[in-house]
Structures are given as C-alpha cells and as structure tokens.
Image (cartoon, rainbow, N blue to C red; front, side, top):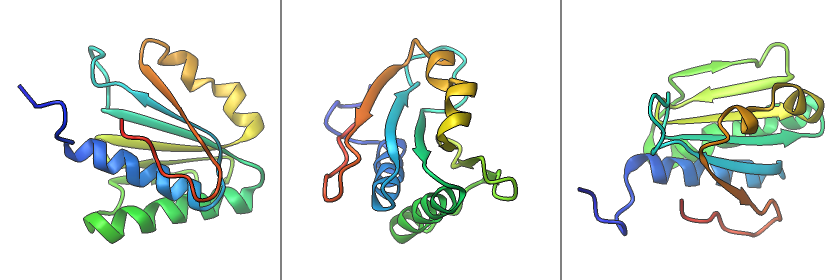
Length: 132
C-alpha cells in the first residue's frame, strides 16, 4: 500500500502537464483522476481549452518542454497536430487533451469520465499546480 504523502510518477507527470498548460495560458484546466476507476485507460486525463489553433499548438509544445525538462520523456503518442482542433499527448499514465473551445464541448470528455475525481485548476499566470 502506498503512503498518501508520497507522489508516484503519474502524480508528478500530471503536475508537469498542468504547469505546461498554465505557461501558455490554457483555459479551463481540469484534472480527471482516474486511478480509482475500474478499467481506466490511464491514471489522469488533463483537459484544457485554447482560443486559437496557434495557442493550441503552443500549449502542446509547452507541455512537452515541461515534461522533458524534468523527466527526459517524450509522449508515447501525439495526435491532432495537423488538424489543430484537438491535440492529445499520451504519456501512458497521463494523457493531456488540448481542445479548441467549441470542440471541447462537442466531445465532452468530462462527462464521459464523470465518475472520476475532478479538480479544476486555476489558469492564472504565476499560480502553482495543485497536488493531485
């Protein structure tokens, strides 16, 4: 059994993803903790919105930079960079989703994983990510 105060790798990775999102002013950052869900595909889904396709690309790049700085990891898979409406960065235990605002409401991932523990994260510049 894991001690509550010790963060595992997915917790640290989730914090780095949130930091990368915040660095490029991503909107409406939501962390879905899927650890307690049976048949979950990952420990965390982290979802944010972008106002433009340029910001969407900048947020994705910022996440990759923040994660690589500390962990030296690249995403296992990355999708959506060419159509620039929804980018997915899959780090296996943590999956980052960056949507253009209208696409986010259409796919409604928060509703799909409604049983997850949901944390809304402040998007303001200079704020620090909450521990998950």
